[in-house]
Length: 373
Image 1 (cartoon, one colour):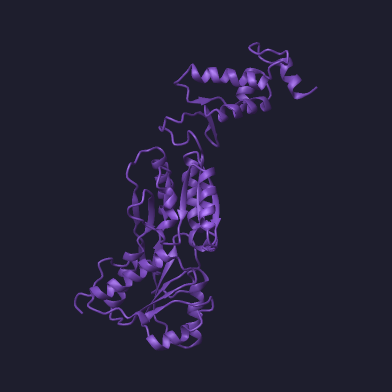
Image 2 (cartoon, rainbow, N blue to C red; image 1 turned 135 degrees about the horizontal axis):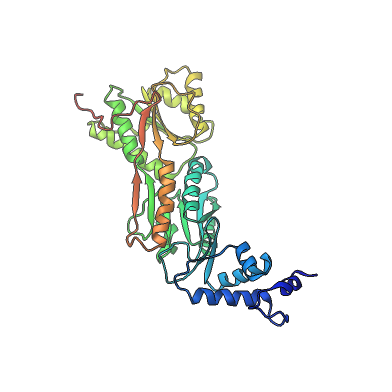
């Protein structure tokens, strides 16, 4: 006996069993009446409960519910069940779609991987799921990825590695977008960034205030324009605040993953403090080069991820600026929810400060200046 025949043989008296109108369509119409006649009803029973109540199979229930989803009367959300839906009602941000897009650079995994867990946790708590879309540096690829993600998802978190405003030209209308790592004034998009400028300025001031006259900065092989410029500006501002002229010869940008020329950079600039503005294995590569060329180890500072990264090879007096990936990930999803709910009218620009401390756990004095020099 086929499933449809089995359903008809035991179906609820509400339904015709002559086979003219499929049971799933009759059930869909019955559930629609149920929803429309009770505006206060926010949730339907689960699949098994409906199957038992109407004496039909789970397959019949699922087909009926799929039709109601297509009519935008309900939405089916993992961990929350089957909820009433309405395109005009923004009291619940999950009414029309339950997926946010995470659009990230394919070659920047080390920069954003630790952000995924807090974003996922925050999204699941609200009944959403996340889809990841990766883009490359190939011309036009980001625009294609953005178009695909926007078509399939109700909102978007975009980890942007370019400062080109034209990238966001298609987001002038109302669509929930949160930019991670960049802040664009005058554009209708929210943003969540780490305060790289203040962190670099405070670290540089801290070293200068302790008599370290040559504070150098080395960037790594991950070259996101946003944090490179912000950290460089902070380094320069700290020098100016101390009455010093920033010497750009003390900035090292690698041409390859082997950091070719870094040994010569050390001999030329003779830094007594070095800020490592790079990621992952770049730290160890630089430290190995310093040891190999037998240059006296300068006082080090490094930007690190909040949840990850091996720090065992750093000395105890190393200064860490911890990127607040947990807070940033949570803030991104919350901003997307608020925007979707239309709870905020002006796009929010959040800049989250970094915790700065030594490897021994001592917090860096954020008011360190050059007073008394």
